[in-house]
Length: 265
Image (cartoon, rainbow, N blue to C red):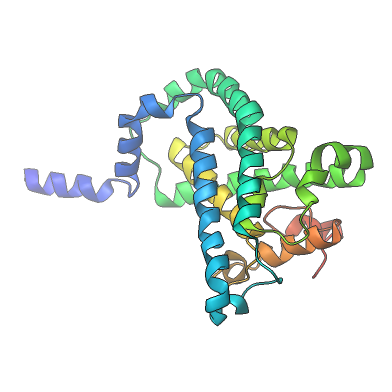
């Protein structure tokens, strides 16, 4: 009888429960104010390094060159210079802003950790998608406004458009104000949706990957925009960098299609 109860209980356990239990066990480390920003920065650099490796293999691997959307890949020296620029901007601006937001969210995080159950996989995916849509919407509004105002563009966004041929790491190569605002917008999106901490972590990881993929300079057949046409992907965003106007949404296409700002390469 007891075996039957245990079996039934295990069947009703959410698939993500072990993940949530692990997060709760390490709640002290996760509550550290700089934890999120440091993990996000490290994840972005590691993912970008994968595409740097593809750039290095390109001359000896024709199949890699076939999927590259533009000519000469980024050199290691230029990549490291970009990493240095991003690092000091994070140290001076993004990390302090993240620390302030982390202290402000201490009470909210403590209440979230009291949840014993993890969300179902369906709920986690729906909450993650909702966060992406909220982030995408407000990013589109801000991005459109900055591009239509020459003063705002020059002060806050022009540094991101120095390279007309994007590479993965340059997704973070922006002004300090823009980097901090993107960090705030990502955290604010999860608060608007009110999602479970597991869904929040999934959103941040997916957000990082999509930013890297948008700037990677490769159009692989397994890229997300090939599987889900609602996403713009690397070709959509490269057109933005080459023409400077149009394709203002970071991930989805619908706002640019609705407002007539969608462009092709």
